[in-house]
Image 1 (cartoon, rainbow, N blue to C red):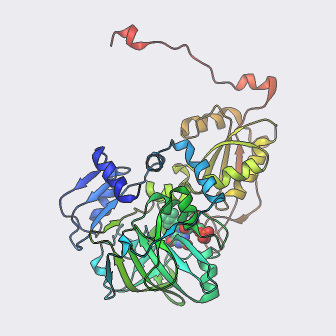
Image 2 (cartoon, helix red, strand yellow):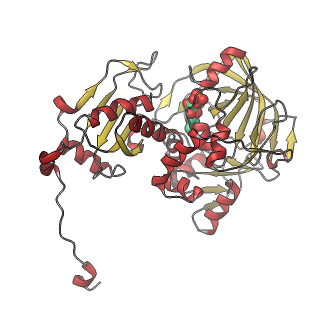
Length: 435
Ligand SMILES: Cc1cc2nc3c(=O)[nH]c(=O)nc-3n(C[C@H](O)[C@H](O)[C@H](O)COP(=O)(O)O)c2cc1C
């Protein structure tokens, strides 16, 4: 379908809020995105830039499902299938994302948003970083980038991730930061797969698309994206990055991070800048959703029938996971907890529930915990270990944390009877009240 057609479909369906009045990229656009929460927004005019801005496009699973033409519960199997069966995108010479080529770089011309009062600067938060190492490994992932000059950013690079490994190896990496991507590319970029797997091939199985070569190195980038910022990231050249509101809705600290020098910008003629409001729904979706298939796979591999997984917004879409299983053995709950932690290493708390619990309804999950869980029997506490760098309660230097799992499933067999939810009789209110 592509991003453009999706935005057009939203407009036709009356689900796109179009802001005609000029807004500032300094705080005002972010305030509108926040106020409209999950509603997609198109800013027709931005005070400091000639480009339009879109945002809040994928703030709910339903939006991703609509894009792919499937139901939300079909997303996990679809992503699992794509991770297991990557396919090559079609390479083309002529690409929309290179309609305009600017080698005289001036980042101030772009509508890069300043999101929150205490942020360290204007941030690209939707940028998909594509690199190719000297050894020929193409890697695709997200990194936030804080503008620190007309042609420079400081870039948050989490240690021990793939990009960090490649940068440590090569010290200077060519990079194309793609902004304005369709969900196949966004989701693939957010998956955690072994180094060497080209995430664009996962994107192509999610939905076939075209790629082209960037102008400054021999890699592949989505041909239909809106903007591409090309240049190099240098390991040894560091500048302050942060503060920045992260997934947990709290400020991440200032760190000395590698610098990204931009040498060339390409874009569509009427390019749309894709905003991604940090810490809000869309950011949560992109972080949490790609972890659900990996948890799902691990639980099933452990011999437990996993029906669904929700890395839920209440847990910042990162620190909590709710796993719905078809329990067949008494220890299935605990096995699912252990497998869940293997499937998402940053997860801190896991809740396992039976098939009769709606994992998208927080009341129902809490009900299962209230009625089926006993701490001395059903709580699994692990030794201190590395958790998420995003968790403000983890050790700030080592990210060490205590992870635990709650087996909120009911016992099997005869005993299960006492745990069943009562069923009330149904009534046709229309008939009774005549409404
Ligand atoms: C919206 C979004 C923003 C992200 N920002 C960063 C970031 O600033 N730095 C970082 O290292 N990882 C960031 N990530 C996480 C990486 O993309 C994530 O770790 C990736 O899926 C794993 O890639 P890897 O297996 O190639 O290391 C972000 C993810 C998303 C979805």
